[in-house]
Image (cartoon, rainbow, N blue to C red; front, side, top):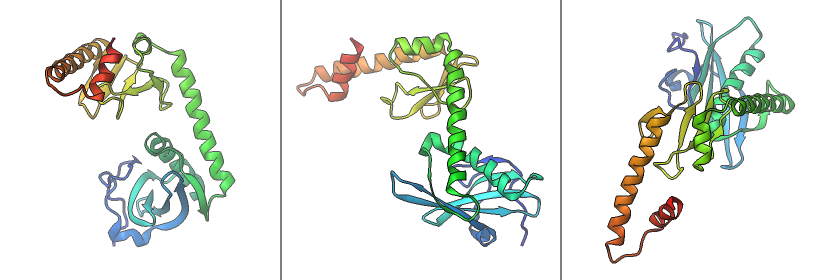
Length: 235
């Protein structure tokens, strides 16, 4: 069997199998090395690694050791396997923590609990440092968001990255802001632009809500809780 990487890309894939391929047919080539736990969902994730013939290291995981997917792939460096896996885990944990938070150590045949804890602490320290830099580099866009009660927060992804609850979803999903060029974007709503574009979008959303408000007060039914909340916040 060809034991090369399915794709030559390097990076992190949070469970889509779209980047590095579906590992089911060759999962026997992977070696177990760790179990981590999401204590909020009482779920355990089993982690495995594979070294390909073309010198890539892949990390795969499966919820409760089922339906495994490749979550990371990088070319192997001259350092030993444990160091390679550690660097890959750091990259994976950084990306995953924004969506699923930090996982907790259960067991490993490569890492001690102390070593894993130090990995998480190093990530947290780096993120806090980047958040601090972001606050120092605040821009007029962030000032506007604070004054209009959007409660912007630095993400820690880099020193320019901020986030707010999307105004088109009552905060149910997030909108990202980059202060590098004071630009924003919402992947869910497929909207993006600069500060003026954001202000125009807010006016557009407000007009839609006002139209809905008028429709509701012209009926015999009481205003919905959603409309009451919007009207209260508007004034």
